[in-house]
Length: 192
Image 1 (cartoon, rainbow, N blue to C red):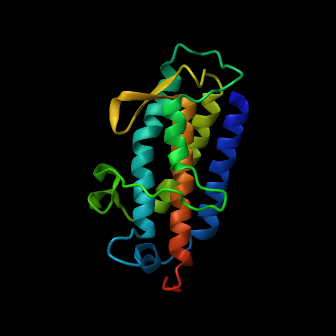
Image 2 (spheres, rainbow, N blue to C red):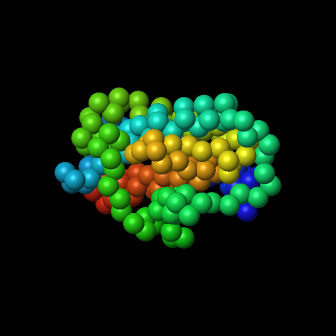
């Protein structure tokens, strides 16, 4: 895949996420946003709080790496590293928009353990974060997606190629938006 094709694909997913957000989540009542099917499940607000915590880490790191890199010449072809491919594939939805593997979230990104992650405006914050991500993708067009490295959230020592890290975050967003849609689709979800 070329670097340009990758960024076009990631932009399209992010734009779809924004459209989906506006169509499905902007007009929910407070009761709907906080509803859980059981005590171990997340509410819609918790899903978005988790996504916002992720963005709070990754977006500044992306922006700084893009701004300060010396690898200013984009390369035509992007090739994932084995670690990077493993990371983003673990987040990518299946063909039927299903979550292939369930994963546990780190406590620092989990609103069940960190209730201060929820601010009540989590859906609105997510939309702003997605618009910011579109700007990051535009700026990423100007650098080498393979040479720029990004430390991951669980360890500053482990670094992914920028192209892999962008895929990881964007597929993660898509995955959790599907989770939030599944909450709405639950037969016990409040009607208003």
